[in-house]
Length: 198
Image (cartoon, rainbow, N blue to C red; front, side, top):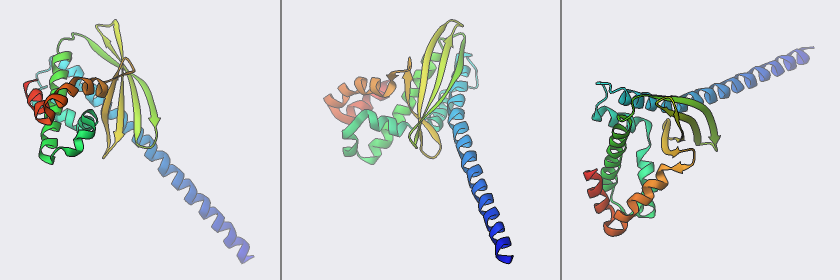
């Protein structure tokens, strides 16, 4: 009798443990999904503020937001490619900061031109263990629609490392093509020089 009672409680305990584990994993995935959408939502809030000509949006604040929401080091590393390995740490830091400023400046320049914008969320798609695609549509002046999808990596929190315009045109590929001339003609020093001008 004792053995049957203990066996019953052992099975019960096992079920409870399995249930708690499943809850914790479910909770993690929900939290994870929320945080990746939050990264994109916060970026889009900043872009809405730029479009609305909010006085609270400064260049320094935009740089800080890009630093928080983007993995700019991964981006510039992918853009530079194999040559990245031969660059000194100090120049890696310098070009990463300049690239962050470049993104911030482009956002301010582009979105301050728009009078009315709106972002519509179109869901997410998990890509492997470390990546996720956040889909959205940018509506300009209540009529023009552009698909903007964000690729995020789970690197100390979800951070953007590529943006797909019209759903397919990769910003990484575009910048790789744009910056390749500088890298071929004068290496990292010329790229740094050109980014300082932008």
